Image (cartoon, rainbow, N blue to C red; front, side, top):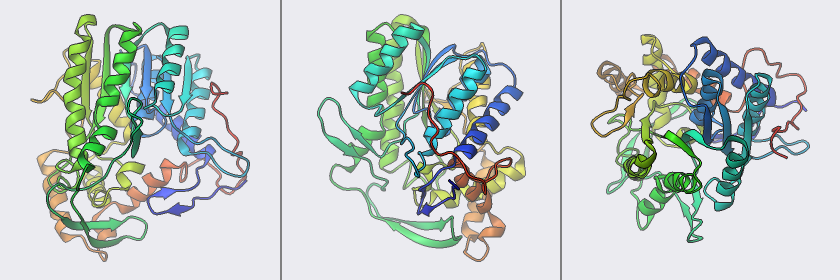
Length: 396
């Protein structure tokens, strides 16, 4: 079938298998160009199919020759209907890993569930024995608590007051004002349940209970802080409470891993175009302005550049891992530079529908958004028929 992008708001209803394959190959090439990383050799990535999770799996495999197990929840293809992009990404990753002689297996299902945890642990027992790096990179709007059976839904809302500020429709370029009503009821609790650290801790506890953690095992979860421009709806909103919980959980897990010399970290990463970030009002405008400045300064990074730098310059240098006063790894350091933020804040005040194309990198935002779904890559003939029925080799 000939596959074209079909947009609905901040999601694309189609994805291109050849484009997703090209995306994975591009990331592999980048990691290989940066040299070997003295990283983990048996790696579990929870949330491995897109964004930072996919970049983590690629960096481990092609930077450190690691055996990897990836857990994700993606939609397989059916005749005449494409899979979700993460499915095609994972299929391409496994194919490239196997070509390179690397172990790679995947588990497709709800990572919050006991069943998927057990399935994953069984594969580790049978094939790897233990893992020495566990990346936690889940981004889900809902979570079914396996202990209570309650379905929790996260919300993107400020706390206390209505938040009003600018936003941009990245498809049309229209800049407008948006107001978001504050959270109420159980919104904070539900958001913490979905996006906090409880499930991360459950994964580590399950691995530890079965003696599947290698001595000195490291686990890393990803977080975000961001600037004052977005803090009311992000870091000081419901999501921020969840991120606070996630970051506090790192200390709890580190205490639990002390008996094996292990350590848990939260890495605060840069703002990037993802399906999740595209859904948050205000964030697309901020990212469009940020991209403009960081590209001009020569310090722009995508997911793969961020994670490769995290591995090579933070986690695996042979020295102590550098952290801030709250114990977090800061790989958002270039984004949060004072000069960068001052320039973004100035452009923010100037932004209108009429000048947004000139003062921002909205086109770069759109390109990255299309890339998420496998569209817009050089070397792919989008006018040719593509085979939508691509399978992930290790998933039967």
